[in-house]
Image (cartoon, rainbow, N blue to C red; front, side, top):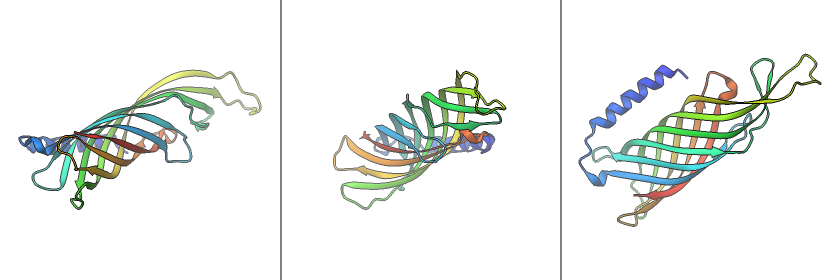
Amino acid sequence: MNKSLFKVLFGFSLLLLISDHLSAQNKNQFLLGYTNSKSAGDDITIDLNGVELSWLHQIGNSNFSAGLGTGYLSSGKSIENGHIGNGIISSNLKNINLVPMMLKFNYSIQSGRFLTPYFGLNIATYYMTHEIYISPLLLDQSVRSNTFATKMKYWKYGLVPEFGVRSKAFKTINFYAGVEYNHLFADEDYLNLRYLSLKVGLLL
């Protein structure tokens, strides 16, 4: 995925968001919740837990809303073995930390009395750090050198479709639950990451 394309989309989306005035307080919603994420691909096994914080603003009198979201996910668990480039094998990844930052676009279906279904598509950038344990692959594959560790830091970009429900039974605090599919893109195949997030929390 072209990084320049994401930058253009981010800038254009921010302009659309800022252009819609924020005068009506009841058009703003804040979401604070817990999220559990698991890998959705065969190449990488990952289990992340963390929190998320989002702000959504209703666009005019429509069912559309736009906003910003961020969070923090971490895991001390390892990722299954995988190949990295030519001549290197990854033993595992540990101490994974992931900070997603999203432009969020939602559409709500005003159908129920107590629950409001919604779905959306988010544009995301991620800051990720982890420790990687690697060992060179020798010509004789039965013999390997000592494994050593290094820490890696990098940015990724991705798309995040989501759906869920929000309660509207109370005046001040309500609840929400949803599912997100995060697809992260990278130039290297072994850094492509896909995971599902189950999230629940408070709607303020």
